[in-house]
Image (tube, rainbow, N blue to C red; front, side, top):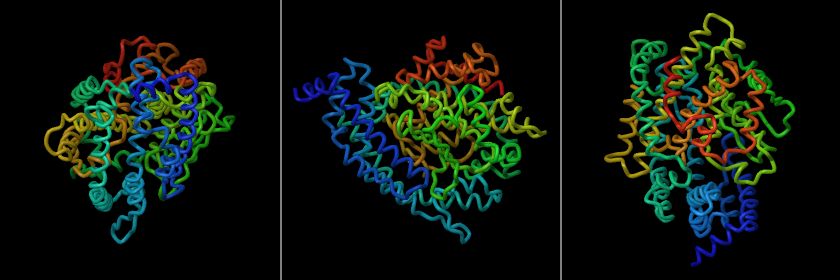
Length: 497
């Protein structure tokens, strides 16, 4: 009776509006903390303090009320998901602060040199010496292994909290509240891996020889392979900003006139190696952040984040919190991947890159793309098994088995926990890769092969973005004339490059 009464209070128009206003204030405080930490501006996240201040928003009672109301009011589902995941996050904020602090303060001792933990990925990407690269990787692995008991406790607590909210496991919580359709996606992941297996195995040896010669490719070497230093002259740092800005201009977006967008490509020792876009205040304060390592990857990552940023600045500021910030992140990733892929597209590259190595670069970039999709598919399959109780035996060994087998590169078991993002983000990435191939075919049919230079296409995308991401990926697929998510477009795309 008490929960029912709370549901009625929360889902009334006035009460729900007040809840969203306070939730937006929390979003801004949390995102600013995460942004400053990941951008390398502070060694401390201070998330526990933020969750303490806004803890009333995500109490167990409130979360249960919102979850209970979703069947009667589907529009509340994204708010229920937001509240539930923040409730989980708030419950483990102290652990996250401790884990982050331990990593941020860790130094790797490699050949007498002290390397910050968060700088290891970047150093491996740029280190041409095989032995030193592998020594850095091993030192990083030891730090990860050291903190794995903390990560294991964290995930065990997440599972217990999911049970307490009425779900059989963490996987069911993600599936029901986010609408991810995890089991069908598990089958799609297996299909993608099978359909691209022969192509991947045929291409891998040639690319491995470029990095390690006759030696066997190891995990540490993948960072250097992905880096593609040989193509640095084609993608100078001095041209990065103009490549991003000109791409936006071609579609009718003048980034110089957008006051709320900050493009942060400044290297910092404690800056996260993973690029990101922070929606601090939509659409008025958006941070596009990358940690430059040099070369083509900077261009790819920047274009990916350009997709997020363009969507963010186009969202209607009059929309409620639910529409401006929440929804299926699959949709946001679709547009990020749409722009990222331009740096692997001959027409876009040929306008900005000139030289005999252009063809070799495109081969390289598209192989790395194939490898990344296969890695994501295998990683998602592991996470599905781990979070739904379908996994038998030692999870670390299963992780290593799945990824090592599908990549033909040994992946140590120690990374099985640090490799997992909250909320099944691997599922949303995989769903987005499937859907972006469908969207790209639609844009090419509607606006031509060079859709990215067509301002009418920019106007079409702007209209899609105005509504935020309240729809699910399946709804977007239907809007562009498909029956739903279908792997065939992605497989066609991969096989044609």
